[in-house]
Amino acid sequence: MKYLMMMCFAAMSVVPSFAAETEPVEAFTAKLFNSKGTVEYLKKGTSAWATIKAPFMLEVGDQVKTGPKSRADIYIKYGSKIRLGAETVFVIGNVAPEGNTVEVLRGKMNAWIRKFVGRGFTVRTPSAVCAVRGTVFGVEVSEAGQTTWDLFSGSVQIADNRNRTIDLQPNQRLEVTQAEGAAVPVALPADVKAPSEPAKIKEEKTEIKAEQVFIEQQAAAAVATEAPKEEVKAEEAAPVEEIVAPVVVEPVTTVIPTQTVIETIEMSPSNP
Image (cartoon, rainbow, N blue to C red; front, side, top):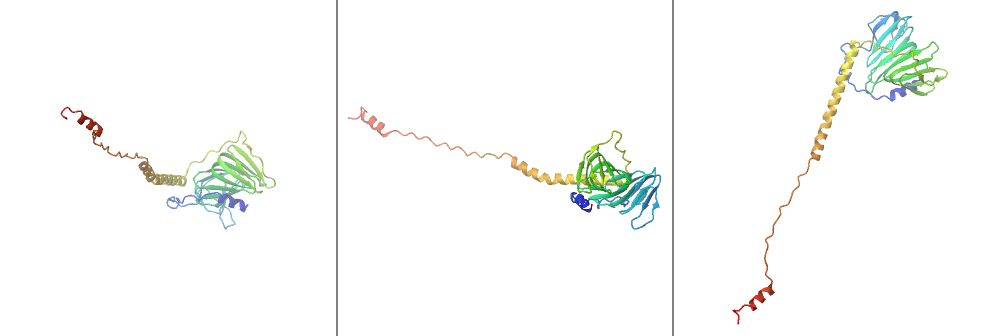
């Protein structure tokens, strides 16, 4: 499974480091921004679960657990928004500009992953690893470790514990078990609809604005780089003025043939 994780990250190009220059006003890693019912968390390095309510800041390595008829909405830095259903156990694995990693040990999660150049999102379950790019999807893990993936839009690649990879298409479902690995993808059931995305929070809006500024700066830089080339092309394409040599008119010289002159002299009546 570690090999699969390394493979997923190796395929991701490094995202431009705009974040260091445009950090949100409120520094954060992840934020529980909406909760319903019983939500608990286990801080990394501790052994006691504590009840929490939104808003609540989370860090890498923290676990979140929801009770019956409960729900938790979490936004993770760099464009990952997730919703945990009832009786779900979830872990924040890694948070970085090039991609976030989370783990669903049990229960159900829906996710809205914002697409951005060079950025990925990885989900681990007991039976599979999923590499995500700009996607809306759902994942559910049973008590036995069976994983069901539902893709609503975007693209995901799922690797089972036998190192087999499946590219899931929108509106498809894939089931993966620890014993058998990945099954054949099937169409989503008619009653399964794409989840409604929670409203954007302050931190999310700040990041989106920073990304837009970065994209505009990159576009302006590209235009500035291309401008000199266009000028050179224009000069090369300009018509070359043709230089026409002046026409030299040679004077016409009339030459009387010698024979004609002689005959004229002989026929003159003044000559004896």
